Length: 453
Image (cartoon, rainbow, N blue to C red; front, side, top):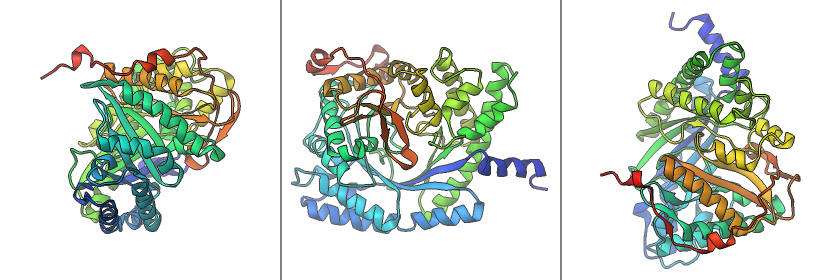
């Protein structure tokens, strides 16, 4: 017998009871060969190439869902950072490029497209500047396009000019989508040490070091991990660590199976498998509840950082034993609006913006899907970005900021984004000004340990 009855039952429970799924299959496509002096010609080439290469993606995902009985929640595209592609053209406004990507996504039934992006950790080229200036309009007039800007890295330091500008861009994007509680900001990430292959939005792009195309997979199963811990409530941390690692191994093997088969059918290389515990607003699909299952009364209380550190590390250790191509973020995400346990912790006062920042030193990414008062200044948002970039730069890890200053709302109000994005209470922000700090500009140098050759 290939599988025992227990293994079959266990797998069925993972899908039906504990919300295990393939969160995304993401086809990465290089658009470098689409660049032309004419913006209209560049966009024509982009559209033509994406329709050709990504045409079978959605149907392939649906076929695999039926054949394997595994839910694949999103079918996504990630493209070369548009700042690199559009720079050859005479265009000053890059919004039409976002509209081209959005149109292709709608035509093919693709959920999201990542890559309205720029890499400016050391400086801004003309194309980078134009893309960043276009972000508010581009993300407010499209539905499925996501953008990201890398403003820092361990090797380069923190580009504080770009940080200051991104504070302004976040504010402008929120204002442009004010009628939707600043929804445009849910599609915008500011990065330090961004991975070049990543299936998770809003930060996905097909990096300059990638090949012509590849298929990346994101697996998620917070409910499965929580269920595994529920039966070991008296276990020591040594035992808990082993349980999490073994569970992660099982989840990763499932993702590896789907990823390799999807890549084969699409005729592209298999890229990476990202085993990140990415929560949803649904009850039973929460990273915060995993921390509470370890013995914390509420996520955010003392001990939360230690619990999250162990969870993230064991997820990575279990994953790398199950796949030779684990990448992306791989660990645990702690978005607020997308995690019902996090929402409950914010409402109870157990977790604050400062505690979330502390948790980002050990989680997979950073400050994610956090609603802020609409009156929060661009300088304060930039300072929040700078703090998070420093954590990533010094710790040689990926960190990111995705915050939403909700126009017209104050701390304690509710912001609703819908679907997998959920909704969240608006969090209190330190009222003291950071204006003088952000106004300095320049670059915060890379740390001493970055000098390795």
